[in-house]
Image (cartoon, rainbow, N blue to C red; front, side, top):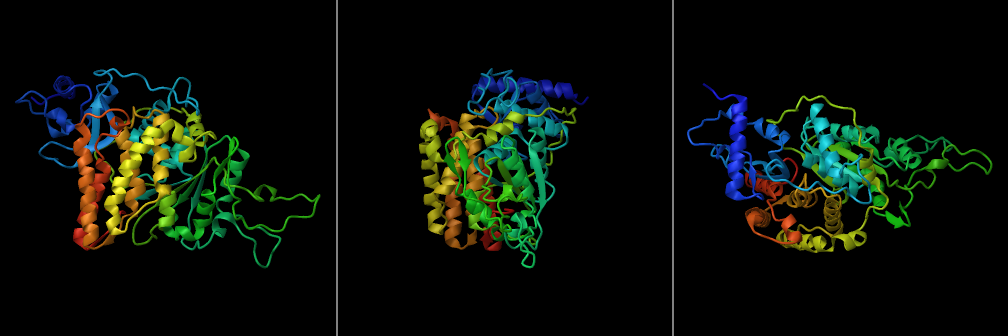
Length: 487
């Protein structure tokens, strides 16, 4: 007689208890290891296994680390899969602290709690995303005014910012990019040559005005299909002004945006465009771009990649299904407040006092990567380093380790800020990528090494980056050239 679902669940719980006794509370593993620890001679059908991790997580026996690792079963050996640890039912853990500076996302909740709850609500609505991936998006927005969601069509790139805005009670503007956009007038508007007293409003103006009028609200402007037109042509002025952000007392200011407006009316005459004159980049505005990388679109220039966090939606887990649970109407306004908090560090100098040890450790790892990439002419500068350091600073300050391990956060950073710069052909690049794959693999193998202090947070598998580099090597061997996108 075949095993029932409850019998399979009980076998999984007993296997976890055995694993805890054998390996200790800090053991991390792929889900297929569970089935290697059931009693000999008991056959659990493959169709009865995939949904058990979710059930084990709901009952507190299992938790995701946010990292990725390699499967260990004979059928899936070497393939990338989610990494788990023992849940609080087996290994009690202290509740995460409420973050300072931004305030709790909701009464009695931490940022981790709020992100986990939003993920569960999205899951109930049919939108599949892991808590770590949601935290990654949240951290990217906290660091950068521009986040790019790239990847294949149909993976939910446009839905994520829309759903996040709704769940955080933020303002949202959808802007469909047109292929003919060629300069900043499409975003900022322009004055017609033959009508010098008239102003034609650009696509971003409503978002800018909303952000200026509601400084306490997060405003998300979605540039949908942003690379249908060359991004550096119509968006370069925005990127340049974003670079001028600086702290001015309790507020964050910037140079004025280059918006072409008619001449101001005479004194005493009402000016309908007064709000736009000398308007700066609002610190509560986030531009989220979506991009499909195929033959119908344009690639991103180094200037764009250098100033954005690029999150790739290219490896959907087709075995994962939404929970189907009832979705509540909760909102988490204070989570948006954390993103736009004016006291947030906008430079490494501001964050250094709180994260000095972290910065020194991560900078050393980034320097090792730089030395590996340099022979192929691939380098990254202080802007990339500082974005990574600020991302990890906020990961630490907001105490997100409960939903995304430090090494998983570092893995996201390497994947999103360093690897998009890699492209080209030739033997030198091939050797460089192999050395980088070996370095990342060594970090994977060092995951079980005993480390102390800040190093312990980042001693773990960088499997997302490792698998991406392996695929880039395979593409180079197959086509004679390689690239980040789609590999």
